[in-house]
Length: 275
Ligand SMILES: [Fe+2]
Ligand SMILES: [Fe+2]
Image (cartoon, rainbow, N blue to C red; front, side, top):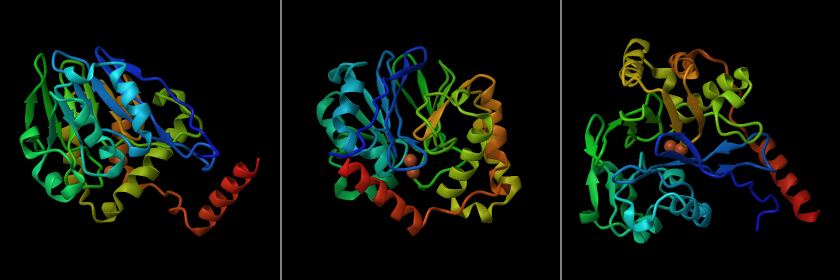
């Protein structure tokens, strides 16, 4: 067991029938924490969006099934094939016999045998395509910043919530659930840093084309932004988040942590274990 047990944050409702499932990394052994969120849309045909890290399986399933019965889950949408988004996809699909997994061809190929879901229980939905979840038509749209070629976000026009996958990511100096709980400078600097970290090819950006890709997402008219590594962004902060992501390539951000940081983490963990 970790010498630094995590603080559980209960699911938070961010819009009608829409809930963020919270997890995080870093508590106790890193200077900042990183949200590891998922989402549940509890509509006519309930949808789970992304599935977190595998090490959070028990809490993830408890939180999801506290909102929706396993047999009622109709769709599981995975935004891309990274382990912090797919960690519980197999156990969730096993537990939810009536669910169809929304992925795409490339995710199917890249996950290979790590994906334990048979093809007939999947549907391939690409960037710009939609699928019906009963009382709502959900739109898969690639976010402005991403780290896998399989990435699609998910927009729900009935609530105005856009699931941005790895976009709008920001670390948390302390546990929060919404962006307005962070110091505004910390939030903006955190987004710049994470956007450069997850998309190191930003140095090759054609800014005009990049701005067009942001225009495409902003034109959805989202009123709430949620994401795997983002404190939820509501209302007046939504345009601020878009303004920040438009200019992240020009920001000066800290270098990626190196061996010195690892030494500090190991020392902190050793001290914690000895306490
Ligand atoms: Fe990712
Ligand atoms: Fe991620």
